[in-house]
Length: 134
Image 1 (spheres, rainbow, N blue to C red):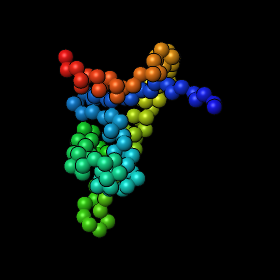
Image 2: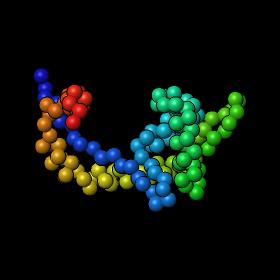
Image 3: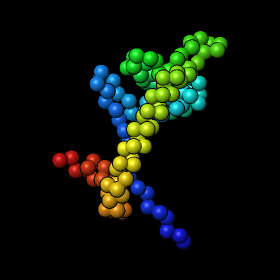
């Protein structure tokens, strides 16, 4: 049996913007799913999130920036949503930040990965904490 290559640690970026807004992996996933589904309700179903949560996230994104991230077209016929040109640029900038951070941190992440205890079971830690409320 061939030994599988160990996984490496990864970086997740969460941007705290100076105007109080934020942008992170959840927002990126929502934008990507709206692009695929062409609607907020379709994205909410695909991501298994409530429509309200998705709508509020889109609204917050659109209010965070001067230009909207998602354009909506309400109504039963021809309704839906699409990512704006600015929204596409936002995604590109975010992915660039992720790429630069990952490249910059590669040696440190490799060192951390090399020091991992591969027998660690995160579920066991949660169970132990639940049994022993300190």
